[in-house]
Amino acid sequence: MTETNAQSLKRFLDEPEIKLWYSGVATELKDSTRQQYLVFLLRYFGQESPGSFLKRAQENPKPVAIEVKSRLGEIYKKSMHAAHCTKYALRSFLQFHEVDMHVNGKIKVRLVRKKPELKWDKAEKIIQETDEPYRSLFTFMLWSGLGEDEIMEIQRSAEIHRSIEDQRGNGYIKINLRPRKSNLDEFYTLVPTEVVPKFPLNTHTYKDRGAALIDPHDMTTVWRRAAKKINVWQLGLGPHQLRSAFRSQCGKADVAVGVSEFFMGHGASDKYGYGREVLDEEHAAKEITKLWEYNKGGSREALLESTTRIRELESQLKELRQEFDRSKAKRERYE
Picture 1: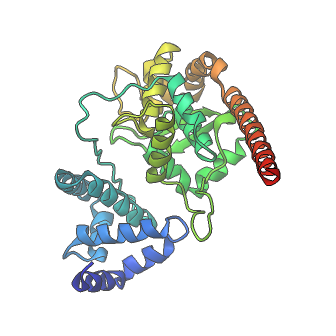
Picture 2: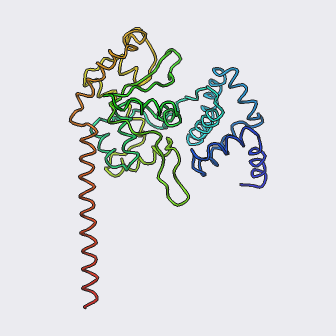
Picture 3: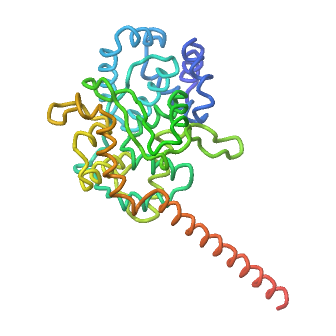
């Protein structure tokens, strides 16, 4: 970074709104992520002050959201990575300052003509290759149909955390979320209690790193590594494709289309009757239970049982290798 850029970044960090955000998200974001977001916010705001941007977003959220989507599109033409980082930096900045403006511009993977198919059983195999807490998180995403945006909303909401824990004694947990589409006034999902982890979920602590909220970047990194382990990785096959597996499995289980679409946060239409039966929790529960019954053979308990057995075998193998190394070392001393 040149001296000029360093000075610009320092002045930017002295802006009151940026300074508050930067120190306030220290427990949520890794230091490297915070610094990266800081740079992308500086590039995005340009000559506009952060305070001016927040004021516009508060007073006219919809026009500003459209403006953000348009600018993200321009950034995307130059760099998909920069577009993603800018999107998440803006979202973090707005959420910290409690500005209710959604930054939901979709950023598609380049060169992907057809989205890769992810079947339920393949998704479970990838999930088995991950460690906790990612295994529980991906299992939850698979059974709920929720994407990264909704996961981050849950991660950051103490109110949702309390609501989940208050429902632990029930057969399923209802999670109320902000509508993803402008033509939805209500959005919730129903998920079997046993597949709902205890939120928030944090990265592992390692030396002076970790203990931060798991974010979409973490999810993608761990997912890609697991998919590569079983040789199924391909461009475009990210955690978001768990939604595709959920939707396809709902179809196989004969869940009403309106219910499965609603639980994925898709927009309303008369065809699916969102304004009527889908908002009836009893009806929605009856329909989504078809999916849960259909997947009994692949329940989370079965997944955890098989994973536990795998770990036991890995432990036994490790002990055998250690014993072999000790015996080898002992033989070499006597030779």
